[in-house]
Amino acid sequence: MRRTRWIAGPEPRGADPVVVALTAFRLHRGAHLPRACLAGWRLSRLWPGLEGAVGLWLWAEPGARRIGSVSVWRSEADLRAFVRLPAHVAIMRAYRGRGELVSATWTSGAPDLWEEARSHGVEYSEPHG
Image (cartoon, rainbow, N blue to C red):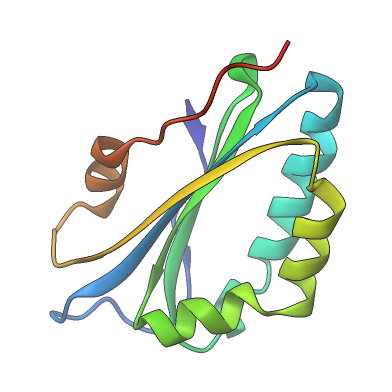
């Protein structure tokens, strides 16, 4: 698995619990992987200006055709606002039907959010050929 460096948002981590969202997208075809990665990278450029965003890691497992993110938020309302952003909605629409998306969201005060996210894992339905 490869991941980006921490991409900081405008909110400091602080001592209060945060909302963590793990997303994982498995593409049906490897041919879509480069553009999907680029779309995620472009979206991550918004992070420094997103209200309520603490930070983000993007990750990829190219051999498994999997990409995703671990995003950290001040509140669930901030996460929901991001999900409704036109740029995010456009990506979700563009890749609908090209793979399987799974996600998990939880509140955490853990010191190492990356390791906690890895322990959550995600489950997919039957593999696609």
